Length: 265
Image 1 (cartoon, rainbow, N blue to C red):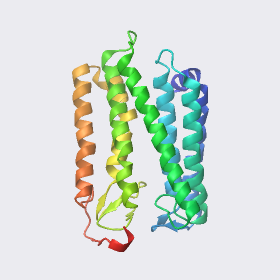
Image 2 (image 1 turned 135 degrees about the vertical axis):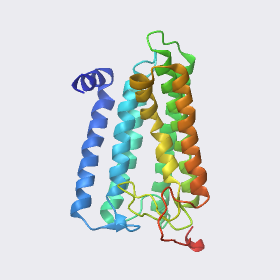
Image 3 (image 1 turned 90 degrees about the vertical axis):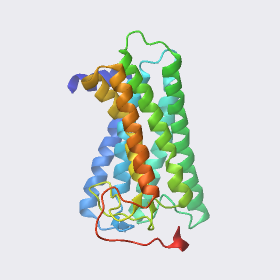
């Protein structure tokens, strides 16, 4: 682990420290869930900034590692795009959590509507930039990388991009639930619904292909066909959970049921 951290810092010092900052913030946010009672949609308000900060930490370190392989890539532009755009998102989510107010889906005032739109634009810009990085991994030659590892990076980025944009399915509905209004059933720390469909499940699974597939390929599979096969299965898993959510079915059922309120969707 120490060797990995030293290498990561050498590869991309900016995203290394930014990711480290996001990790520290995620720890602060999760501690705040134990000492505050402010809630948004029936869960502690600080869970959302925790999840976004920790996810940004994982994204930043993964992209810091992968982008090092790219020849003639403007890494400084990419770095600061990630820092500024995702930094704005985390700041606004935490700011709203502190007030006990919604960050996502909040159109209650013109200011909140604009800030919510800016968050969507920031996430879209980072996702498109990541898609461009993925394209470069197809266009460039990497003679020093194992072919199975290269394919894991390529396919991990593709699945990440697809299921990042799946977030628009939630944004367009102003609701992450299908069958209720933004249900949070405290399913572990992710707060996924136990009673209705939850679009966040496939979003989560798909986005973390970015880390999971390269790790499994490099350390476990060490085979191109197995890597591609696993990537297809992983992508299908994310797709199946999306279809399941759209049908109003939770990932894990409980005996409780909720009905969606049409006027609030």
